[in-house]
Length: 189
Image 1 (cartoon, one colour):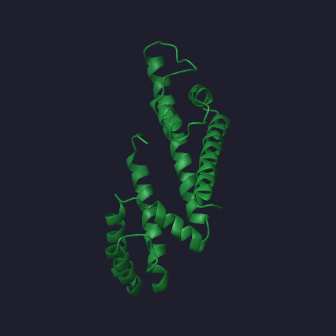
Image 2 (cartoon, helix red, strand yellow):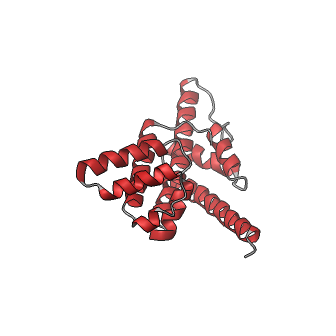
Image 3 (cartoon, helix red, strand yellow):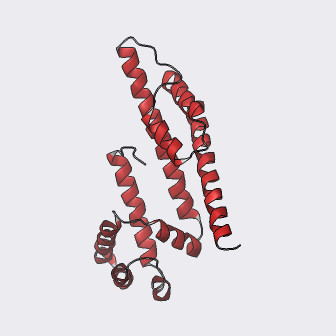
């Protein structure tokens, strides 16, 4: 998705990745051997498991830095299968929350700019964030997305923000459901 990420969002994602690394490095050696990652990263997890205190924390930060640019979805899935779904659900919640905040920020900025220039801020305003969300979740109602963001930008009524969150979350859950069904049908289940 091509939505520009704020510094605070980047920090949140790094903290989340660091939590993942800390949890994975706390797993038993036999489980670490099954991690879906490169052998060298697996070795680093084994090393972290034997460390304590500040040394362990620095090692976890090092592993986090290495994984920053790598796809880590398989590691989240692996951990959620081993330790429950809480971490995966939190990550998905934050992703939906991030999309909502990006859309609302864009709407507020458009509204301010329109008022400053004495222009009308229309319900069907052009939104690059809404377009990105629609590409990610093709079944989502783009008109409703921009309308809810438009209403929030004009009134700051949190009801519209919550509605927007529910809309994006439903589209996200639907995409997960379809992806799971596609995987099950490919695997003959």
